[in-house]
Length: 231
Image: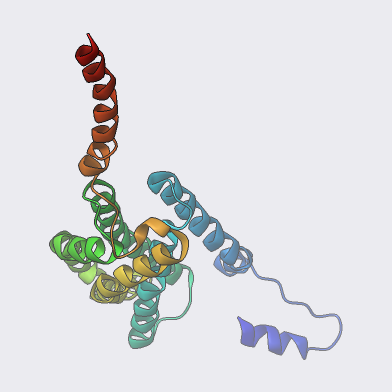
């Protein structure tokens, strides 16, 4: 299409070029692609902010998404695919899958920090270990599910192959690399924006609740003892 536009620019006056059908739809959709990506990421960020009740923790999940995008671009390069509409559909799928892997680690780490009083480093390390099997199972199932798209042939195979290469390689990198990068991003974001995420860890809720109770009880008991002694 770009080559045809270049040739059309060299035509004498009185000639023009106009796109119809799928070419016209691609031109119209291409102008709003970046806006759609921005809206998608904004929606994900707002949903995660409401889930974690924090404006900083969702950043750790969003920072891990380029890892899956890198794999999708690598898959398109290996498969000889172009940046078309179907590749962009696969790209959005990879972004969602990578975000899912990040959410599984970050959410579990936040729960351990809130309930057990662990520091960010210890909480995210144990969270990555415990959630490794669910992440691997879901990613493996999804990756095997898109293999038929990569190997498809016949009518309409171009669209299926474009989606298959993007999602398959994006799933591989989003799983193999996100399991390491998400904890790193979580620790960095927690230390930068949340003081409660230090490695020393927050005090246990039970011990914190027991601490101030003892002096109050002792002070309350002192006047009673003195009164009974005076009587």
